Length: 101
Image 1: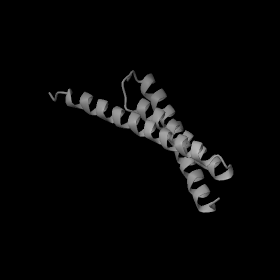
Image 2: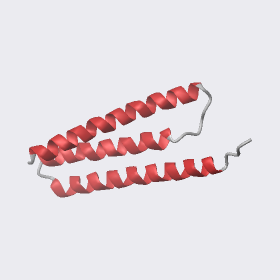
Image 3: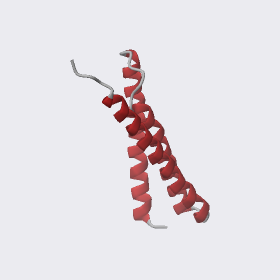
Image 4: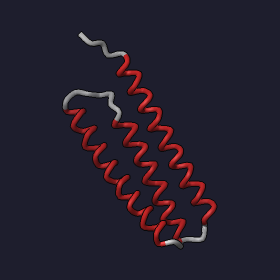
């Protein structure tokens, strides 16, 4: 059990929580303004997966189930990064369709 790793994982968890809160607030604000398709939905989902990965990493440091939690940690981050990459790609495709007057 490395206290440095636990501290880093807890700080990353707080950053992921802030990202979830900011994403929810941004989605709510954009929905009020009538914007439906945004980059914030993939960011929200990806941040939830990052949060789950960090929670599993913290639990891994306190428990002896290291291999299963290590796999969950990395799979969660991989899914989060995949969703974020897809969201950015989709947003880029939307931006390419915008025409200037």
